[in-house]
Amino acid sequence: MHRRSFLTRSGLALFALAMGGMTFLTGCSWETDLLNWLPLGIQSINTILSLLAGAGILLGPSILATIGVIQAGLEDLRLAVIEYQATNPPPVGLLAKIDTLLSDLVANIGNVISQLPANNIISLVIGLFELVLSMLEGFLQRATPTSLPKTAVALKRAIVVQGKSVVVFPRTNLSRRKYIRDFNHLLDAGGHSEDDLHESLVQKL
Image (tube, rainbow, N blue to C red; front, side, top):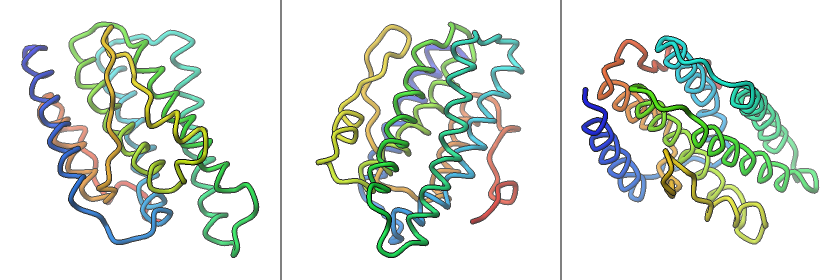
């Protein structure tokens, strides 16, 4: 598929996904939704890395280091949310810690996107990263009060995509199944349906 054509299609798809997210909610608590999604978030990063490796793209040390921080951050976030759910009332400062973990993930993913080299598959990779990013921003918006400074900064932060400033809007549809459909839609549009996410391959919490 021509790069411009895919960018147009994936951009329209992301817009539709974001708008769809403005209407539908799961009805679950944010922490339950987040714990349900986190294994998919981890698998999504692994899928993106697999796409890059399959295209023969060698990432620089800085990007690889940041991706390692992202992977560790997702696990730290999972443990923090489990602690938040298990303790009543939650320990003082734990919500701020979750806010910081989410905000750092948003910033680090934006940093990776801005450093990706030009390549035919990069448009797809950016679209997938943006979907992960919008999901994290959605949880950030829903989980933590906007009075927390890191939340306010993260939700107003634009990312640089191939030299252009882009704002990725937070999703309010935090359903795991909807995320799988949206992620796979982008993969299919990019010609990589073999890498589709499947719930059966991801640990259910």
